[in-house]
Length: 130
Image 1: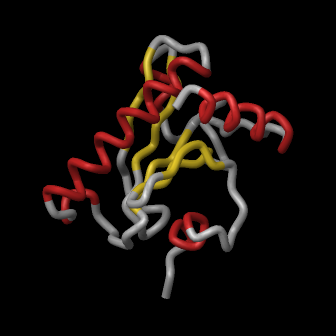
Image 2: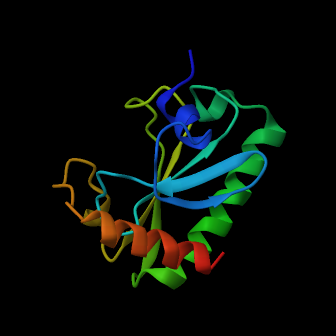
Image 3: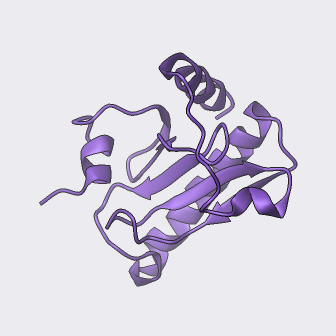
């Protein structure tokens, strides 16, 4: 059975897409810790980052690096924080979160509620920097 993220990458479920290539996909988290909080996934299903073969793992990280560079240009912040937990959705994914302090990465922080228009504007801004 396809995962939620597989269905998003396949276009079956709408998202705020930031970037895509033949193997990887990036989209805004709908419950962001910060404006621009982006999820980066492999299109191939797998549940655990460190179970990926070396080529796919390296490819995912290089894709995430490109997305992070665009995100940093599009959303004012000091850094792009990176988190991999992998418990909430059984599909390998990397969180890229614009941060200005280490406390911005606390996963239990309150989530933002952004309008669909704001989410789309952020996704478009990041995509334009790719």
